[in-house]
Length: 545
Image (tube, rainbow, N blue to C red; front, side, top):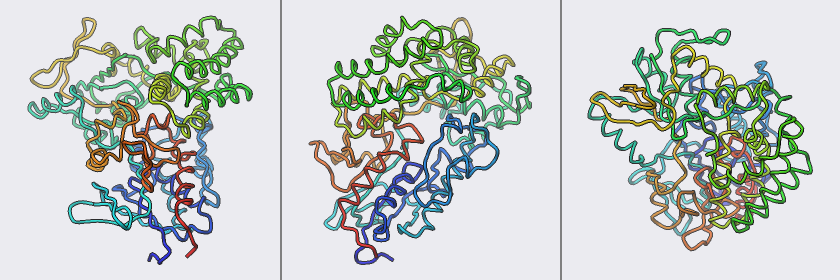
């Protein structure tokens, strides 16, 4: 029961990012946390985990971060401890845990926070579809006639809301509905795994060849009873007959170095990291040309040192970096199978790393430094587009999958279960039963298409009523066309005139541009949440109940 001094807060969307924010709020409020009542609006029955890490998600879906690199520090006083300690399942430091295991850990952290008795927490499964500002604070609507509030503060951590389909997908949805073909989403993976039992022996196309495609492929093989033994795939007889992934560039992402020892070869020195930290803090507020030069001047020496240490020529590094700025993600060409094999060989240390691979690994090591320098800054729109585009392009290296998943993909190609003949932007035409893919003289007919493409954070494509309503009021404005929301450093929204909207917070990938490298588990528990929590404490006179 809220007392007369209670400050009421609403968090809309309570997955890992919402959990990180509320944990930070409890820490920042300290003894005054008892004056805070927080309503957590999350349709899932597992608050804190969110759909991506749901404990009931398919066990074949893996994290793309090895255990050695997972550093989501639990809050002070938590009884859960670090993820590796909590899991206590003998998972090696170089192994990649299951996403459902992380979900159980996040669920435990939420339970621990709730039992500590500082904040007053209430979970509500209602879907919020409208937000209004009243005399007493913010009001939230959960369907016609059902209002919650008033709240002194509202924080939206929405993850990836529904979007309007692009022209291709919209056309395919109409076609599938009229022909009986199947157009299926990649997630939730448990649903894909269940529905795939009806596709035994069929050809299944997969739209996208990034991390989601690896999940889809594992669900359609391991999830159907197949297994890998001694580098070979042993079919169960229940999986689809052929999987046909494709994307615009046709290349799979590169796996991370296999072991801690191999990974350490790409560690920047302390001095290099300090130089980069200063460079990105300055670059984030500079014009684009200055920002490009400042980041390059800090990044290039570190990459050249690594290349020289590994005995590789560093002479082409400057040219590679210049081309990457001009057209991020465009420098790798050639057959997908060659890129897959090269990636495996570089990650296991049997092939010298390419210049691009070294750039990507050094950049990965600096992701937290990048966020610390960029996110609190007031970044010019053109500079935001430049730096975000550069970071997104390097994700083909920095956000790579486990090497085990790449080896599995190679084994599936060798077993004839996956073909990479259609990966590079094939011609796709509609057929009476589905789709026809054509590339380099090859053709494939399919009646099942899996959409594994993660939507961009472009606010103009969001179709969720809560978001479209905020856009219509001028409270949620894109920083620049094609990117996410305009925010202050503490996560408060800036309206169409650039003025703060007191008490209205917004964190996550839909703020890309105001923040950078937001598609990260570590970002959910990072300084963006702390800055928001500090702002809440500063704006509200908290007195312990």
